[in-house]
Image (cartoon, rainbow, N blue to C red; front, side):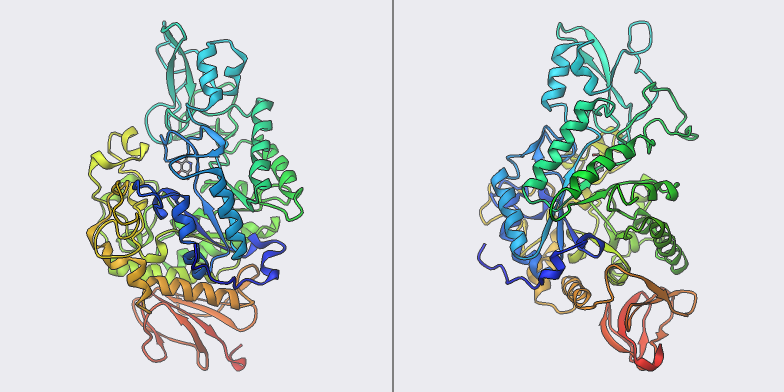
Length: 558
Ligand code: NOJ
């Protein structure tokens, strides 16, 4: 450890409803830092870089799953929710991290995966062994197949990763057996949330992590847990309402009881939902009612094109949606499931959609980087909390040319390579040096990084950026530091200021202003304002294209 800095946080920032304002850094443990030299990131690596996290100036980290898992979906297939996978370390190391992070004022959010577990989970193994009609099968969705010999899946549902959502089992005697439902990979059988044992188990898992000091949970696929028990066929292009497995009313009971658990701790724990409901914002807000989740990611912002009118609308809609339920908006530009921001913003079409064809689009990375710099200043100035995905602070781009034989994402395999999947945003971080693995693994490590790093990531290392005050890393550090010291930032309200159509400018409480120029021309800065931070060079009193600035307004200009 050694080089951990004294905490900058004061007692107040650790009290109360921290999730309303927090800047949260997402750690994808496989790719953050490798402590033991096997080429896969681990807890030893994260602990060795705690000072990096502390110096970055974040309030919390969210860990993608670190549990025991056969890794059919990079750990989102959990075999034991109370154990750390040996690839990542031990439970003792996880507890030590949570403790050490608290000492430097950083909270820990763990990922809970309730929709499905792993086919290596003891319940599923027992269900397979027990055969049809066994009570343990009711923990999952086992059904007989259709067709004369049960050779067809029980219904027409597709996996979100591609292919059918059902896999046929073998009976204990080797004959063909029932099918089981998996909305994701075959290694991720869906749990049956109608069964009280499933509910009890997850409530116990929550307490397990909260008792170990976890400050919150990110809830994976939070809107999918409940299913239409009739498992009827449907047309995905014209789904019925209610949908057979998305956002069913009954799912809210689960989170009402989770909230009681979170609130039962002297310092309440936070529940953060992964709820993708782009078409139904009003239903999204239902998850954030005062007795349910505390926050949920705003994926509309993540998908929004680099366009002032679209951004303004997404921001306004996001704020308006959260206001009636009293929840803070939660802004995010990228995560481990989507294309890296600098690549997206360098394309002609700057939206993120789940449309795989976008993988073919060329990207102007210099342009994308300029915009990503401006975008993070926008992100951090908006009211509410903000999430940043590891590597964003280094300006990493999406790696498109991973050889097929090295790819790992089940999405790639389940679509027969039509969808390249998500490996390109999961490449191990470059820390130092001129040659691969760029300090990701210790010197002389036995294993190469689990996904190949591009040779030009020598230019993106933490070491290189540390020495360059104009680097992306310093922009993140400076912005996070400024955000902390500005009382008007984080939770609260904002007011749009009059500007030209392709410029965003808004004031936060007090005299703070954020201005982003998405037009093709430089624009004038407000007279008499003091520049606190800029995402790129300023041209005297003018703000260039694709540049953001934080300002202190003069008293007379309000
Ligand atoms: C959402 C997660 O973010 C993603 O990575 C995962 O593949 C699916 N849920 C299934 O758990």
